[in-house]
Length: 94
Image 1 (cartoon, rainbow, N blue to C red):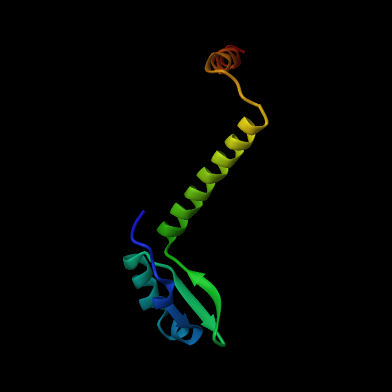
Image 2 (cartoon, rainbow, N blue to C red; image 1 turned 135 degrees about the horizontal axis):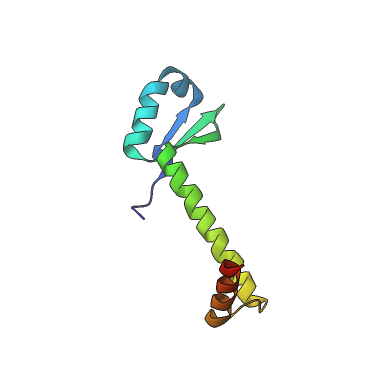
């Protein structure tokens, strides 16, 4: 990944978002750092560019697959490579 981001430097009130939306969207795309939006002094939302969001979703999907695989191994639900190959060949032939 990259250098850790310090989100405290990327905090803006909702009024700033309302008045600088176009500029904020450009900065999000350029910097690829999320922006925390506050309302009444409390963090309420996080904005990020679409590319970063998609990368995050892909990473989460891969982590979920790994967790599912680890659970299957722990539960003994594993097959040898040869067994998997036989099942795949049988599925293709049918």
